[in-house]
Image 1 (cartoon, rainbow, N blue to C red):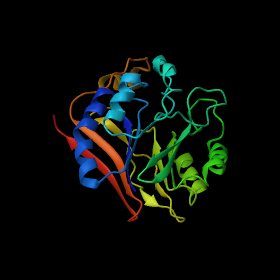
Image 2: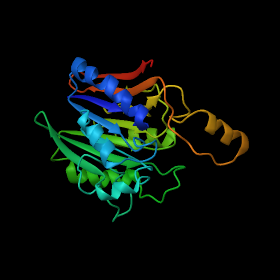
Image 3: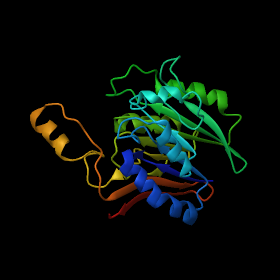
Amino acid sequence: MRFLLIGDVIGRTGRNALRHFLPSLIKERSIDFIIANGENAAGGFGITKKVFSELTSLGIDVVTSGNHIWDKKEVFEFIDKEDKILRPANYPPGTPGRGYGIYSKKEKKIAVINLMGRALMGIPLDCPFRKFDEIYESIKDEVDIIVVDFHAETTSEKTAFGYYVDGRVDIVFGTHSHVQTSDETFLPKGTVYITDVGLTGPLHSVIGMKIKEPIEKFLTGMPKKYEVATGDLLFQALFVDLNNKKIERLRLIHKV
């Protein structure tokens, strides 16, 4: 199986980058399964039904998320109905949506689990490590491949989680920081790991947003309204070929 794991898609610019790069990548690399973090895909904050449908129409099999999943209240209207969108599984019981899904592709059953870290996130979440254990025990005998999007702030929590699940999971890819890390690797027991796959959106930005307002906020401490930057396109992802034990970090740029 060949996977493409795409970093946080930022607004319309990120969706433009998907439209520009995905068709050729799917064809040239014979991609079998695509996961993209879409929690910033609608205006930089949250996701709508229209944007979700746009992402899946481009060939994305599963849309994962994180702390911004609830930013667009429209999400409550469809998150329980669509099995291709996930929210972090370690939200407390009773939270709308689902935290993992099992999908069939090329005669394989693929489990995709979405989890969120707790360090510096400011959200009262259940333990992602123990939540993983719970899910793993319930699905391990019925799936062929397990992939985890671990959405977290600190590199230490992401790394610790990678080693914690090493050998039980096929792929762990980190999201949330919007900055791609250069530590893609096979962990000792065989799990593919990267701390963060980065963002897909504007090349020249402050983690996806127009540059002026974040600088002013740092200078003055005053709140500012952030908007998604435009201009040159950046596509960041991790390509994984499980059959041939190959991983490649992608950072593609298109000048507009």
